[in-house]
Length: 487
Image 1 (cartoon, helix red, strand yellow):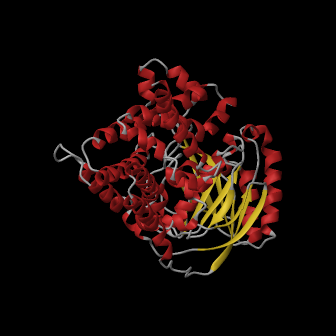
Image 2 (cartoon, rainbow, N blue to C red; image 1 turned 180 degrees about the vertical axis):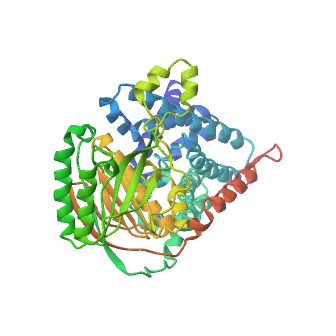
Image 3 (cartoon, rainbow, N blue to C red; image 1 turned 135 degrees about the vertical axis):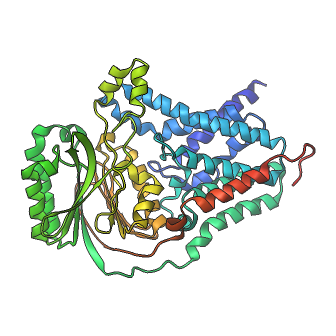
């Protein structure tokens, strides 16, 4: 009995740890097509809540370990990680509880459909609202396997999660029932994932253009100190000169790369305007800005003449990083001082933002959500450029996870994606999800891209088709009558 009891703990914890190893940062992606089987065994045995909770604790604590790199700024991050892991693990526990309930009342196939819809739907729900969070999504595990990501152009990234879970649940049923038909189900799920890779992708219709990406490794502590402005301006100026020498059509700097509000700092702005004029190229850069007493995180586009042509304001700031959700509630609870120490001022989100002359510019955290990039592409974004500052996380696995999202934003919208990072991964991804260039070092990355006008099915319809399918699968799993399980 004691051995069985220990197994009931070890199996879900081991499944969570193994699944975390499949995610970016470790990168054993194919493991995820098997690693959920021990969890599903425990759920099928009626221990869904405990199994889901334990799986979630192991999976999220390991995969989100990079959050602890923020400890050097505030010890509160330890409590923050505990709360994040508890919140995310609880949701998996509740899903496990529901699936255990259905297991006793639904046949194998209907239960399998519920498992698939449940896990995929949970990831979708997790991305919603002001506390939306998309890191640790299962689909990220296959970001470096282009044939497995093409389905995202048709029904979105959660379909990939659904296929991964489907392979796991049908393999579990094949082992459990010793029935080869379920193994065929796993093969069919894998085939559904791969078949879209066989469909033709429209070629680039426009002319190619050369983009020069400024990649840097400035420590966050240095970047926050305004006394370093002169030194950093010279450092980035040298990188800009290197970029100009490549005769680019577009030069991209990272997010808020200088300790200054560039649009309000004549010297810093003049230096970047000179870069645009010398290269006869558009220049995109990130900077903070203050307007009317409000603080914004924005992307600026300079035209080849050096004039400010357009500005995009971040629409989805980082909760508890760039703004405190429900600040008045925290004040009512008597912890206003704690929130003030954490973040004295909230970022003001932009409203009704549009592409910068055909360039969609999700900023950092925004690029981890499919809907932001999709909306900008629908509004005329022909090229996606992400500027980010990942130096907060000190060269941790976070940069791998963040760059993985670029692959999905590219495939979902059939757009070239350019990412310029400080302290992260800078790179270029093709509309088919192939990484054509990348670097983790400081320097200038040069690649050819094209601006496209075609719209993918996912860009047009979003997650609606996938959600309809998930809903139908859940409806099919609803118990109709008690009795002996039916196939």
